Image 1 (cartoon, rainbow, N blue to C red):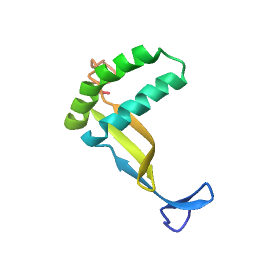
Image 2: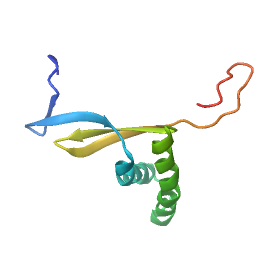
Image 3: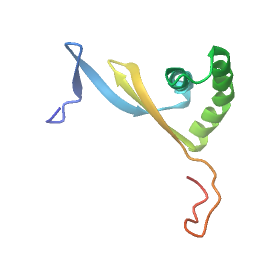
Length: 102
């Protein structure tokens, strides 16, 4: 909306919407989103997605602490409605790009 209004029209109601950085306290939400993303794409079964979530937990927790994972969550009326994340991983420099992280 224009004019700096931070409220959006949702299902016929005006709802407070905000985007915030994910914190270590959001790991369960991030894992839920990650599991759901793979389920929506038809990848794996419940058991393999549970194993993936368990294996992902320490990686995401460490990334949130050291900055190698950045996440953002969209809240509507204080409840997380969506999110996105970016993993910055080690990478070998090349003659074209000397950065060791992507």
